Image 1 (spheres, one colour):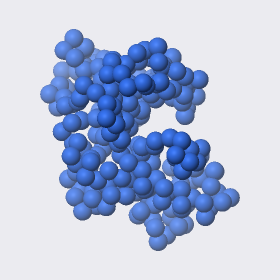
Image 2 (cartoon, one colour; image 1 turned 180 degrees about the vertical axis):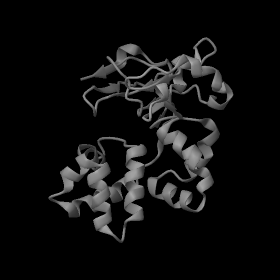
Image 3 (cartoon, helix red, strand yellow; image 1 turned 60 degrees about the vertical axis):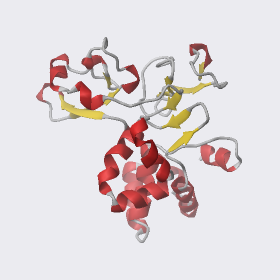
Image 4 (cartoon, helix red, strand yellow; image 1 turned 90 degrees about the vertical axis):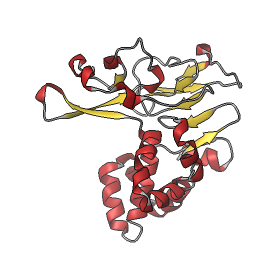
Length: 234
């Protein structure tokens, strides 16, 4: 809600991520049944449920605001997106670059879910480790992909390490991203430890700030090659 206030006062640019998109999608699907909306809010968005439970009428304009948020922002020399920037999907994202427009487009063109999911959720591999019934989700570290990096080190999870014996089952060609030389600022990955510059042109800013980690930012002055000394965090 603080970000909402900052955006309204033109103190910040805001982009939507997977949580915002799926919240707006839930709102869109339950627009005529508020009881169902609040049931799923309590189940899946409990912090939001707590914040708005005693002022429910304030929630609806808040979600209307989310519906107007862009999926990405393209500055002259940089791009901000939630999970992955792929040049192959530039035109698609540009043509429907608000949450509302994207929901309406995907509703009639479901075949475009994959490039949207890549932009807001990245590439994820699901694995049952040690024949466990629990599924572990590994996120692809697209900013580190090079020929020297073993496939098993290109996937991240909060606690588990990617099983090395499974790396031969992954076709590396399916993971290729057509990226850009411009700096890309993104979040989503909930990285561990002290914040660091993930790549000279691809800067992740999610180091678990919402989950007990570090609230992280980069002081960008228009440079093409990013400076690790400009990473700041609290």
